[in-house]
Amino acid sequence: MSAPMKTRPTEIQIKAGEKVFRFTDVPTSKLKPILVSLKAYSDEALPWREIAGDRIKAAGGESAHMVKTSREMLGLTQTELAKRLGMPQANVSQIETGRRSVGKALAKKLAKIFEVDYRVFL
Image (cartoon, rainbow, N blue to C red; front, top):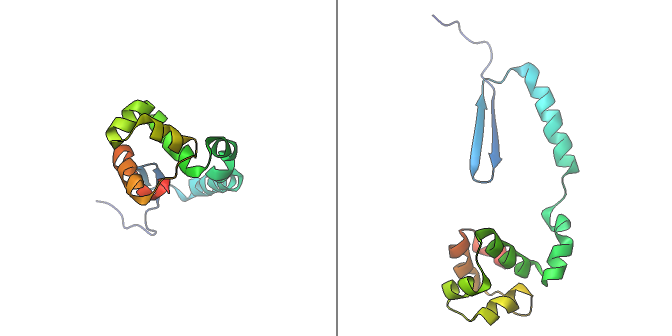
């Protein structure tokens, strides 16, 4: 027979990408070091735009950087992406170098291909 608990069980949730890791019944004595470590990390963390600033600038802007990085992460060539988008490869090249903007309609097509929110590309 279990004894009644004096305190509620502690639960920690950490979201990493799409995955959520849950830790239950974490002893209170272990919480403080965990919180200190996470706070130290968050204090040291820089915004991603600041980290990728040089690459964004070199790519011709944030939209261009996001399209190129997304394409490379999927292992697609510009030609393959162009076929999926139904446009010439030259247009993809212009988008990735910032010479052509990404409108809402194109952003939604890109979002379907890369399975992300379309606003990432705007």
